[in-house]
Length: 297
Ligand SMILES: NC(=O)c1ccc[n+]([C@@H]2O[C@H](COP(=O)([O-])OP(=O)(O)OC[C@H]3O[C@@H](n4cnc5c(N)ncnc54)[C@H](OP(=O)(O)O)[C@@H]3O)[C@@H](O)[C@H]2O)c1
View 1 (cartoon, protein in one colour):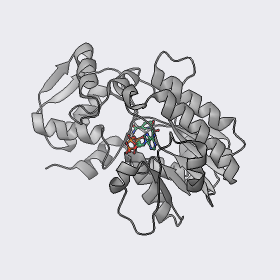
View 2 (cartoon, helix red, strand yellow):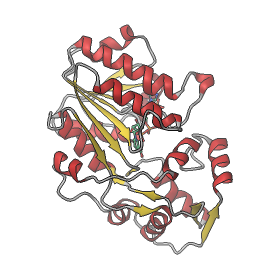
View 3 (cartoon, helix red, strand yellow):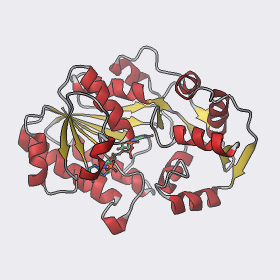
View 4 (cartoon, protein in one colour):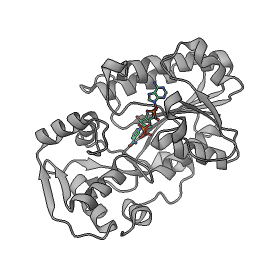
């Protein structure tokens, strides 16, 4: 089993979930990110940048039967060669080719709700292109189109809760009426485990959580989970975007400018097919889940 992005939020949870399901797990990480891998016995490490040529990727795929591709960019940094085109599209194409050459059986791609080849947002276009590369490959494939994923260690919802504790405010972007459908990371891991076992082959599934919430209701639930009654802080869309762009991945703002744009489109889905396929009987409701792991401080 090879997991890309294994030092990232979702990849770390997937690595742990697959290891606990009994798989031999190899984590593909950029050399500088090895220290952020989960501390878990028996994880193999392939320290490679996915933008490397196929020949450099090949050893990471030796002996691998399933690839879970959870690497991705939250923001572009063109001056470092980190663009959606380079990482989501070109690197996925090389990884798929290398996987085909190595005799990999299955390929699982983490994509997102709203991915579309004709989207006006570069992020969503690049995810759609990645989907199509995977779907047209010779491998058995699964595409999981996820809504906002949250859980311990995420850089969005959890960071927002931390921000709320620091600043004593509940921030609402714009009118806060755009919809979100947050899904607990454990419920995404369940899908990856099912896909790794071959139960979701040749399927593109929309993985949203059980609650469709207006953004402002989501932050209210978050405030309740950390047990605070916090005054609202309204942030107009323009300044929110500027701030997110200026702070990029600094961690000060929970969303990058690209993520904010995608989120504000309010993509939701009917996740029942996903739950059924992944064997998820009780997907976690947002309120109970964040209360359980964020709790009052
Ligand atoms: N989180 C969500 O709400 C959400 C929702 C829908 C879909 N998704 C998708 O799920 C996947 C994982 O998201 P996430 O939240 O876990 O993001 P994340 O925490 O930013 O993790 C992404 C990982 O990808 C790695 N990566 C980026 N460029 C790479 C490269 N050139 N070579 C090797 N690794 C590279 C990063 O490595 P470094 O650690 O070295 O930077 C990082 O560890 C992404 O594809 C994302 O589009 C996420």
